[in-house]
Length: 425
Ligand SMILES: Cc1cc2nc3c(=O)[nH]c(=O)nc-3n(C[C@H](O)[C@H](O)[C@H](O)COP(=O)(O)OP(=O)(O)OC[C@H]3O[C@@H](n4cnc5c(N)ncnc54)[C@H](O)[C@@H]3O)c2cc1C
Image (cartoon, rainbow, N blue to C red):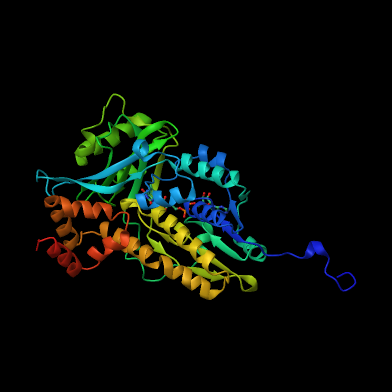
């Protein structure tokens, strides 16, 4: 104090929204707030260059509802006619060796798109900073939050599934799994011909797991993402442990062998002579324990932190919903911020309620899809899809509207009612 006055430089005026993390959640929120003239600061532990040059983060596809948000945010840089894909192809292997598989398509009403996040995220950071956005390279630790809470009116933790996410307690009893239900092996490959029109293949090998084949644009141009979702103890689990770096050829031979054994709808388009991983960093192996956490916590001085994206809820990628959910939640949180500038507990509750139905639907639908043994009503629906193009199209398009999918699948009665409306059952 000088003459009863607080020196000017010690007065800190909390300003705007502090967003921790520059993944799809943090960036879509930052861009949304920027568009609406709300001051925001994004803190990222990585520079755009580090993100671009790093190891592959995931094999994300954005569905059209997310692309529509990208258009509204002015970050739709990849023309859907060239970069999009238009349908799903389903392959369901017979439960017994030799049993006839099911093969059937399902169309989207509007295309989806797969862009390697090492291309996507740096481009969106450029958009944000190019428009004057405040982007700071700084890893935020739990001990920094008290200060950030003094600097900002609201903190958003969009830092992904590790580290700061643990500040938000997991909701007890919300996940049906104690251990990750799948062990993952995702990679980018050359030497797989695209189908015409471009599509994602969802191939199910009963008892062993699923394979998602996704047309993807990476720094190497158009490539193919193969995401093996391996059941622990199944025949393809070895892919989650195989070491590419120790023997690249042996790794690629193993992938080819498992493709041929379990996923013929993909292996039939492989050219063995040119097949291979596009690079040693283009591989991700691991496992995800589905988790939903508390929506918000109270920080020092009565300020609040809200969890967003994977920091709030993590799902297995088998139906490709985590990033789409993060984008949706960012949009809803942004809209809540525009509507109500009082960032107190009531605000946090309202923001949580806005996203709850979709986030919960994604969580429950995803967990149903990987449940073993498969739920009979899910098998009933898959069977109906193989017989009815209309049902297969509706299921496919509902990747854009997970809560509609959950309306169909939440209980056996709902599935029966849905099939009844389609003249089945
Ligand atoms: C193999 C695989 C395939 C997938 N496929 C799909 C798909 O097809 N469709 C789909 O919708 N989802 C998919 N997902 C899920 C999707 O990747 C995630 O849900 C999504 O990327 C989460 O985004 P986020 O912004 O919440 O978190 P993140 O992407 O994890 O971003 C968090 C960011 O915060 C930064 N950060 C972390 N800690 C700090 C800190 N302390 N301080 C500052 N910065 C920090 C990190 O560097 C990172 O850039 C897939 C996931 C995997 C693993």
